[in-house]
Length: 220
Image (cartoon, rainbow, N blue to C red; front, side, top):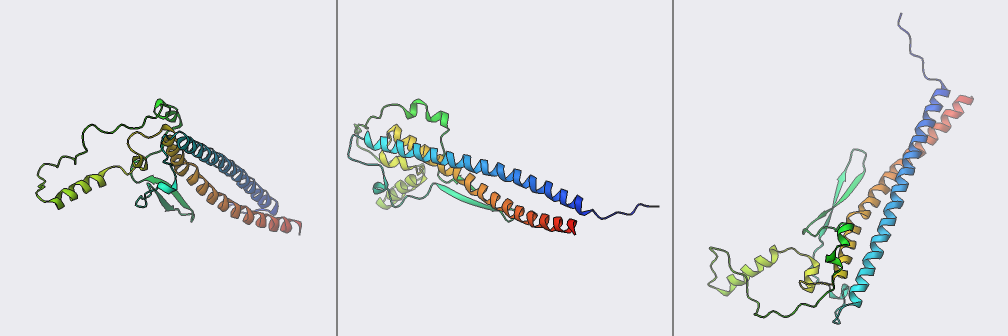
């Protein structure tokens, strides 16, 4: 004779809910630790970036200051935000590069490239000429020459450091690396972790209500 399944007792149900609640609290604490670590990284990158920017302005031999006053209004963002939706209604964001300007590894940042003294570029000995046309390109009219130059300029990497010439202060390059690292690493980590924490908080509240109901049912 087949054994009949007995419904779980209130005590067993209460114990299971308590174990699930403990697991959720453990997951929440891990997310909280991750969130606080991302906050520390964000503060560290921003502080280092602004300090490097101040050094670049202080050591600049000219009166040119590196700041918003000298931004080119035609500049486009070099980073794009990608939002992905999951089955749990959680929107995960990621940062992708648009123009090939990538973040610098912290170990690479300490290399000679970011420490060498900056020298102001000397004027070229020969006048600047337009780039040689590609084979098969006819340059019989001025309009075609302008279109050819414009095409070559648009194909170049749109790195903001190019606004200040080829040789830029190492401190300015380090500031760019810090700000890029800020956008690519701690910012998406903070956003994604905050969403996960909100989801776990909702589950914790729901389980606490169920646990209270189960405890009342076991006492009655």
